[in-house]
Amino acid sequence: MKTPKKRSPLGSALAMLAVFETVAVVLWRTQDNVFYLFNFTYIGCAVALGLFLLGKGVPWARRAVQLLVGLYMLVGLGLIGGENMQIEGFWFYLFSGVFQAAVIHYAVAKIFGPLLFGRGWCGYACWTAMVLDLLPYKRPQGPRRGKGPLRYVLFVLSAALVGGLFLLGAEDKGRVMAWLFLAGNAMYYTSGILLAVLWKDNRAFCKYLCPITVFLKPMSYWSRSRVTVDEGACVDCGACHAACPMEVDMTDNARSRANGTECILCMECVRACPHDALTL
Image 1 (cartoon, rainbow, N blue to C red):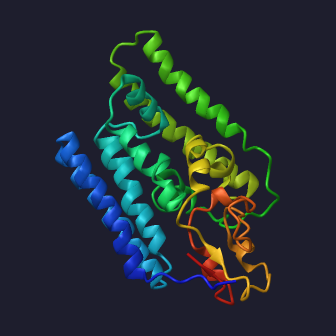
Image 2 (image 1 turned 30 degrees about the horizontal axis):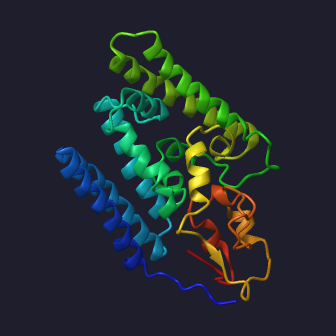
């Protein structure tokens, strides 16, 4: 088998920055709103910096990106800007027939973007995971649980909730959405922390409850950014599986590998491999 070619840290960083800068300029010009130029340039620079530092072996690189992007989305856009960037905000603008704010965010980060960078959003930018990753259960300490279908229940309920506002003719929907942003985050953090403690798994919420994965999982199946294994160098020691917070079978290069659509590109498996058999 051909050994996967390793990418240079600078090359990976510049490529990702180019993607985000292209989106920034296109949206700025087509939407005639300079905010999009700032928004996607900022996020692109943060992600590019993180990828460069990660490639250089800096252990806190991913955490830095989580804070830079996660706090910007949560505090800057959400709490201060009043934009609901949760899935309810996506439904709100979609049902309103307006291509802006949360719809653009979802299109770039969670619907079409994963074709390029998989579930990188979950590993580097999600403000819920930003908090959950600070908990002590960084490696799953129990068997995987068959609770995945719960994400589809929350997905449908979120659409029904926002759809109900339109059907009932609710007044001041924007104010309602701002309150739903607060309520949604409170629910996500509470349930995420509770599941992490009960099941000793920081990422239990991501695996079983997060409704956004309904978009992320099928698109990330075809992602161009994937951790691959050099089967000639791999000795099946199990170090990668023990290190993976999402329990992905990194010893299999097939797209159908176990839990393959849940890889968050955190690179824990790459760092853990004692034979340098894994690469992005």
